[in-house]
Image (cartoon, rainbow, N blue to C red; front, top):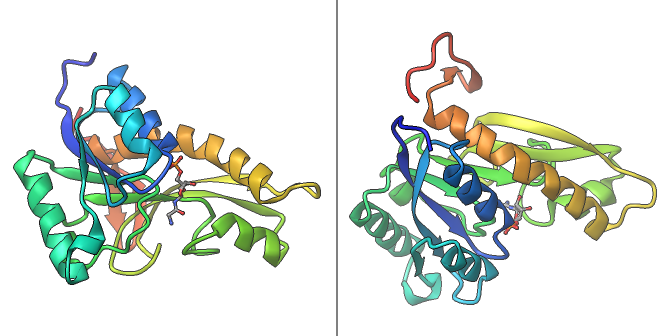
Length: 211
Ligand code: GAR
């Protein structure tokens, strides 16, 4: 394990958790300069919660249905992360739009992975959208989260060819393989200050500041 600083992060998910596992493993073997403080789900039955517990990561369920408004949920979520000393948030299949109530507590400190080449095919069922459109290439995108749905600045992307014989399952599986590789690398670039902004373009920093 690297002796350099590790940033305390939270991973938020709503489902199966392969991207979470990929991030936790990368943090465990020094490829990702992060200390995963907690895995949070808005769904008590998310498979990712069991995987996180098996990996020894503390878990927390915050059911959005228990809160009267999106803002009340977002506020409780931010409080829970603050209590655990979290400085950075990685969304990994977290199927809730976060409001400024949450995002303003973690400015430019929330990133997401999406299974398409944004700005194409935002929102849900991105792989089915790409197939239905007849695109020949799709992929995955890691991006900063803003108030929109999958509209924040792009950090990294990988392209995946769409084959004639693909259905939603086969295409999703090939994209997911690339997601699991891309996410730890992209998050480490952010945490270690290897990136800089030029407007909404995210470029390589001339000198890395951290790690
Ligand atoms: C991933 O394909 C991720 O890109 C997608 O949910 C899946 C979660 O898989 N996220 C979105 O569609 C967000 N708009 P996982 O639980 O195995 O990481």
